Picture 1 (cartoon, rainbow, N blue to C red):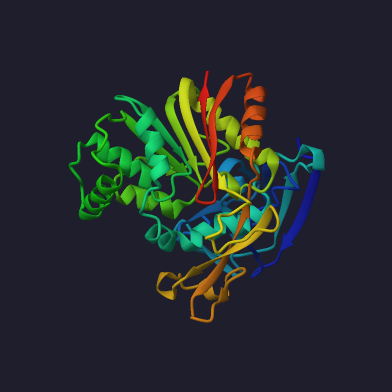
Picture 2: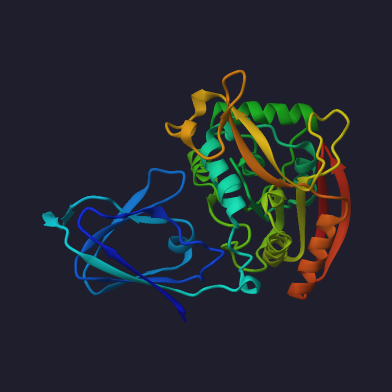
Length: 376
């Protein structure tokens, strides 16, 4: 139920910039009543050129929920005329009543990403997706080893935060018995043979990925991988379906303990009893050979991107700087983990779900804490 109303008057030529009503301040439903004059409202998906426009007639009620509430921005262009159903319509005085539910601090939903994540995780990946994918073709040997040990013939494997789909691709190559779809896959397979010996022949029945970044999901689709847009805190999959699940370098982008725990709840939920999972995240303690030294747990880390990968508006985007060698420098948010921190999240998540898990091992690999577990 709404407990706050905002009344706005719009004269001809006036509009409102594209925005998302503050998730931390207001509830999951936003309603807006339009009066006196029709108007066109534009919706835009972040990080893409996708745009949808709808007509709001007088005395109509607009209700925003789900992605329309939290992901898509909405706004009204500043102009004096609209084209509605093929006719030019002069704008007149319009009044809108926007109804919201004000959230108390204790009622903030952990499913709603805080602003630091929206600006320095979601927007970051929207901007650097092509360059990120360009640098992320090599699979990590310890992740491949985990998949080799636990993927059986007919297994269903979930990759929660699949990025450009490099592990989905690895699973597909096993399924296709080394018959690759393109040259890049063939080169990657040859590299894997050199590192790990003969390929595993056990093939997953399905390898399914989700990711929050639309462009990375598009890259997966271009490679004919089974990936869709989705949130690791609200996995769009039924409970007890995955024989194997992985979350590789995902939860260190979640800025609160509640959100990190919720991601682990979802991972446990989608596993079948007897299913195995692997979680990895950046460690606060980095190896001596690493150029990174972390002195706190929550920080912004620079990402340098050659300008050839840039979008047209990157130079004026949030927090973008230029390095001495002419590259664009974007900032990304990370929470770096201590030993045992992921294990405690998993145990707390299992308790919330009334599930039982068994920690198989926790280990440090190339500056990442890694935890393998079994759902009983």
